Image (cartoon, rainbow, N blue to C red; front, side):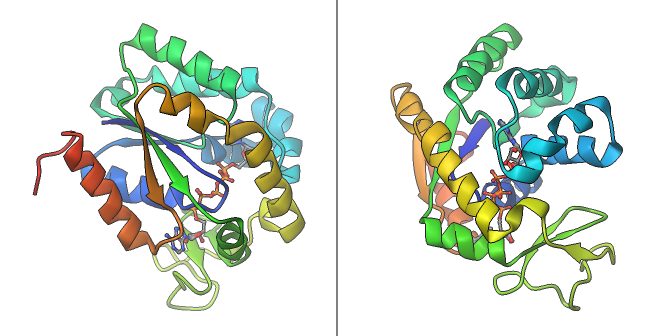
Length: 221
Ligand code: AP5
């Protein structure tokens, strides 16, 4: 299975990517996670991209394309992968096509998480992220068992730097202006499928599983 998850910030792309990767043994490629790790490591790339992540702006296309193509070229992607948060612009989508053609790993489906802006705002306003294992919690939708403590590793839960309300609004605008157009682009390829990102996570997973079944990516139940 080779998938792209497309949708606004807070649509639940990362949450579903984790669930799907566990369920179907796929590689999760999240550009946001890769770039944040580089910032934490203080690498040259991290220093180059830190200001974009903090302000909610997109990292330049050439930088992010190079990161993704390097990751896709690793042998583990042969078993299938999910691209979460990439591509986000037309030049990124075109570079991805060309790169995957060379690797002989064509995308099978592009899933669009249709989500209302007020849902994104509510979700990102309540998101808390573990500082050790990076698992996402939500104060209302997925509260940790103990306040501010990760259920899985005991790490501390923090607010993501770009989840301040003003930055989320900016990210939603950037999504609308630079990324949303990719829906038309992928519609033309016949690979675009839509789910309602507004629904609870378990219901989104059911929608996704039904799509995979209809598309013969998994055996019908
Ligand atoms: P990135 O990390 O990709 O941010 P994003 O796309 O804005 O994604 P989010 O993590 O905010 O949302 P999500 O849809 O994954 O939702 P999640 O499942 O986490 O990118 C960050 C930055 O990196 C960018 O701003 C940019 O600077 C840079 N960048 C990354 N990719 C780039 C690219 N290709 N080009 C250029 N720059 C790039 O869920 C959010 C919350 O909601 C969680 O608390 C979760 O528990 C909760 N939740 C999830 N699903 C549900 C549900 N169904 N019901 C209830 N609650 C839910």
